[in-house]
Image 1 (cartoon, helix red, strand yellow):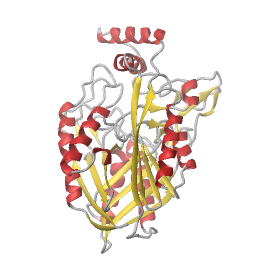
Image 2: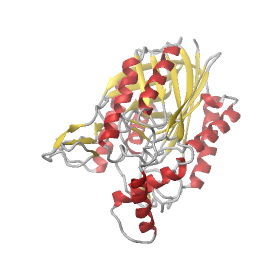
Image 3: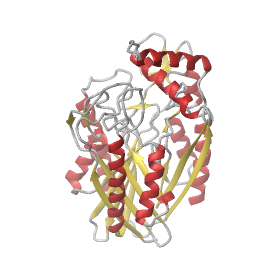
Image 4: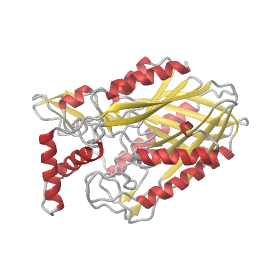
Length: 436
């Protein structure tokens, strides 16, 4: 079928002094803009289908914010809210939009402005839509590495020195797959690029700057080649994946070096795929979505009592270990937010463009689940993305839950029942079959 494509970009960087997300760091105002934060949008439509894809340079987006923003965008565009798909790149150098400790406030002014900016960029993308050709490709470049370490006592942790004598290996796999889409007008002028890979953009974690991290660096490189076009990055199943090799092999790198290396790798593979990708003016196009309701695992009562005590001590000014701050706050917050109704809802999408399926979901999905979706998929190329249409927290495998530790233990941003990831794979697989 004939596809019309429109695309647009907007800078979303807030004023200096706005708090940066930064997890457990209690006071972290931005003092420098290393590079601008952006929202990039692409609108695809045919005679009987339309989808808007948005990629935002933020750590995550609260589900309530996304629900309201989808509705506002849909009304402004004359589009069903279910056809609006909003994703976060997961840069850790963006404004605070989620309460990851009891001190740092949410940047409410930023979120209010962001909603207006997303409505504007969405309408601009629709208004610019023209008859287009679509190309795609699958490549490989490794940006991410598994970060869940296993120990001889049966416990697991995120990081820790792998040179320890009790280290027994990494908990899960990695995924180097790299998927890219290209939309051009009928004269061959590039309109937009969408690309996807899997790693955590945490180069300036606990820093004092705004930065779009390596997805932004890659965007700059692509614009050096293609001009000032919208570039969307969708992050993969990254829940147990970090940005740097964790075995201590090779040269040590500064944050700037990691950003530049991953930015070059990301852009370079997309450029390679572009120069090998045929462009098609008759493309299969479809979209389905589903809301998956899952149970929430509330904290153990003894662990909750410990968390309440740590939070109370911290709020009274008494010191504790930083890792205790994060865990205790997350455990107490989980009980407060979900104790009366321990269920959550995850929105899943599958978009078909030609031979490619774009599967999206709102969790920091563990890598194995992403690989399972791809293994079951009937599509020649399947891309699995995280942190889309809200934030469902970490979604660990049973290995992660049994091993415990950060991103395995139960707290607000790791709250889903043990079966959640497996149910998500089943639902995504069924949706893929609907479009193939």
